Image 1: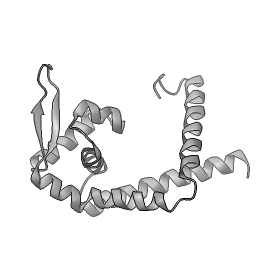
Image 2: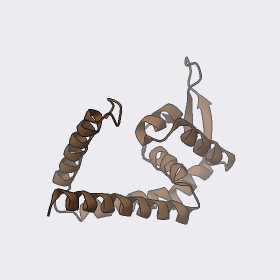
Image 3: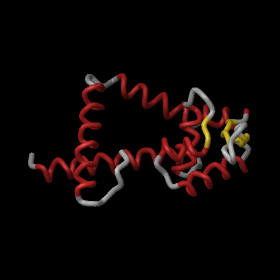
Image 4: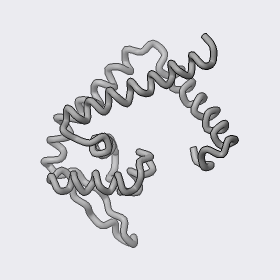
Length: 150
């Protein structure tokens, strides 16, 4: 296989992943961003702020704020001021939100865990995927296509 074929295969895989998760979000009656907010809240060991979500999810601030506002409107999350901060708020799942997350994103998380357990060399896969990202990021920086984060 030539480099162009590998790149096309990688792009195809990324699109398939996007489609799979977008389909799950639709099945849950959620936007992609709302689904990922619930995913991270359900997975977190401690409460997250909107800033934490921005850093974890790499979505635009306004997109995350809108998703959180929608989840709050539906009664799935509440916002709580973090003491000694200017305007930071924790996002907490309500009882209804926890029940909804269990019916939706927790099922997805369990499916992901089962899929990983079926892979013969997940550690190598992750290592190679991270290595590719590092090299691609460096090349994008060289071309002036991204900032220095990564």
